[in-house]
Length: 117
Length: 115
Image (cartoon, rainbow over all chains, first blue to last red; front, side, top):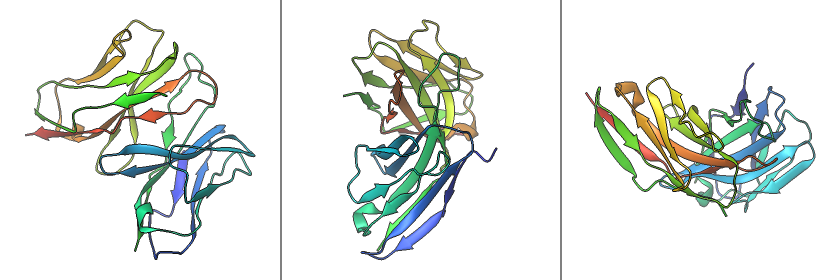
């Protein structure tokens, strides 16, 4: 299993440009999520999905868009990049329902470092 | 709303010594999981240990153990025989057991290990 994969690893954008961060998982997890990590702020939830066709907003959704057309993929779109979106982005996946004895943790991708100039 | 608090931004420990990282949380849920994640300089998030709230016994994974105090809503991580490779940022996280629940993180603590 590849686990959770993210592309690209690094990206530099100019203000106003758009781009898509890719995320894929091969563990058949229903739940997928996007976080951003900023110094002193921990990981903050941007958007999440509990299955194909179902998405919802997290703590900091403004400026980001997501869709979930398949179980495996959960891309994050920046519609018009701003310097405030400079951050490290993590995608994660897990089972949607936590069961006793199961591996209930979220599995994380390697992250994407995004810089917006 | 659930919150996770890690009040110490940085800690330091001598190699081979023991260190305890503190975490408190606030929730009205009765059943949940608590996690400690490690983030080394490589940036990869690595699960260190998990604790089910319904279990009274504290979780242990080799040199890592927790002190889970449900009534006090406290979940500290103890690292014994600290090694240079333990130097990293550590995040405490909380997730209710109910379906489709979200994972909430603390702000993290940077642990340095002195040789």
